[in-house]
Structures are given as structure tokens and as C-alpha cells.
Length: 332
Image 1: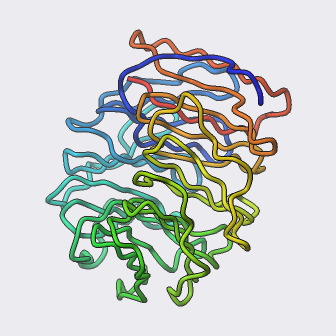
Image 2: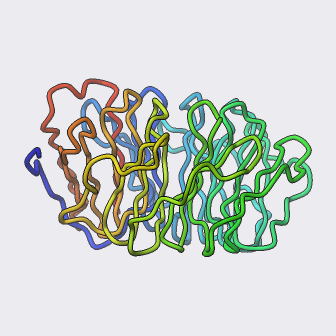
């Protein structure tokens, strides 16, 4: 296991975060603020920028990397320029509850949001106008994720269901039924054949993304609610991060745990993302830490924690990271 390279401390939890497609800039959201960093120079591009009056729940960078959207407890979505933080659109209004999730469709046409008010809303990403009527899911929507072909959106719902809708007609395509607790996160695999989900019922599940049928048995091992799920870029693994302060990497074909759980000095796991080459997994935690894992050896290669002084220092122990390394972290 690689040694711990660096620790920065902060009491605030990591919340919404994303990176530009070229891997050069990080957009981080924590509390009401957004910060953008240059990954190559490790210098702040701008921020902390106070863009919301309530907690930021989610951040998504557009497919072209020029803009990012943030959703908040203040019931607004803001769309800003990744280069300087300038507003690109007027705030997107319409939700009547906190907005837990926001994402772009891979084709860049849509911004899609999910809310405490039980609705999924669609917005024109260029004009900021609402498209069609909101989808009423019947319960709080904790996460949304769009299929690679931009044809479907999956909503993670509090009633234990994953509901998949057509992004054009907004009709319900199918439901994935099996979880017995709130679903906190959903993710399509790279080519859109599979859908992963994690829940308050302590399980991760894999579904056929065309039919909604379960693939294999539930993935069990976590002992607390699971808040984050993602697939590896090559589609071989599905990864779950939980409130038991562990990250588990599962083989998609066999459903078996791949290596030991990632653990050790972790806070609750709130967010995870792979680097494009699949060599590194980056995890955000409720204790304000960001961990960079070398998943080739399941080693923790770096840890970042926020200082209350807003000073950030990063040291990557691996010399093979290169320009494609994605790094996400929260700064107050």
C-alpha cells in the first residue's frame, strides 16, 4: 500500500463535484461555494465563489467542459462558465424543494435535475428554458444519471425504485424493483448496457439497462447505507461507497468482491469517480477528505483534506498519473 502523501483538514463534508472532460480543471462544491482548480498547476482558477444561499448538493460539468451546473438546497440551478465563474444563464427556477441532483445529457442538449419535490425536470442547456412537463416520480429523487446515448434518464427514488424515463417523451420506460430502502445513487455503465444502484438497504445492485431486470444477486457486504456508485471505465467493475467508511470494488461478471475493501482513516463515502484510464479512483468523504486510490494495487496513493484556512496542497505519490488524472475535492 502506498504511503499517505498529504492530509488537509476541514470539518465540512465533501458534496457535489466534477471535472472537465480534458481532466485539467476541477469544479468543487461545498456548503454554498464553488471553487475551480487547475489540476496541472494545482492553483486555484477562481473561487471560493458564493453562488447559492443553501447547501450545494450536486455539480455537473458540461460535455464540452465550458460550463458547469450546480444544484442546491435553495431550489435553484445555476449554470456558470468553467473559466471564470461568470453566470452563463439566469438561475433555473421551478423546483419547489431542494434539488439533490443535476446532470447534463452526454449530447450536451439537456440539463436534467432531480428534487426533494419528487420531480425530474428537463432544461434546454443553451437557453435555460424548461422542456416539457416535469416528471412526477411519486417520491424524492436523490440522483439522476443519463445513458451514454442520451435516450434515457434514471432516477434514484426514496421508495426503493429506480425509474427510467425516455428523455424525449418523458414517458416511463421501466422500473427496477428490488431495493428495500431509499436509492441514493445510480449510474449507467460506459456503453449503457448496465445500470448500477446503491441503497439505504446496504446493498448494491446491477440491472439490465434495456429491461430493468436484475443481473445477478444483490452485492452484500456494507453494514451501513451506501451513498455512491460508479462503474470502472472498462466496465469490469462496479464500485460502491458507504457510510460504513469503506469502498468496495465488485467484479461485474461474478458479483465477487475484487480485493479487500478500501478503508483506513476514512470518513463516510459521499462521491466517487474514476480517472479516464481507470487506474485511479477518487473518493470524497463526509469528513472533508478526498482520497486518491491506485486501484491497480488497491492502494491509497494520496489523501486530501481541507484546511479551515482554505489552503490546499496536493501531493501525488505516483509518477505515472500524467495529465489525465482527475482530482476532486471540496473547498470552503
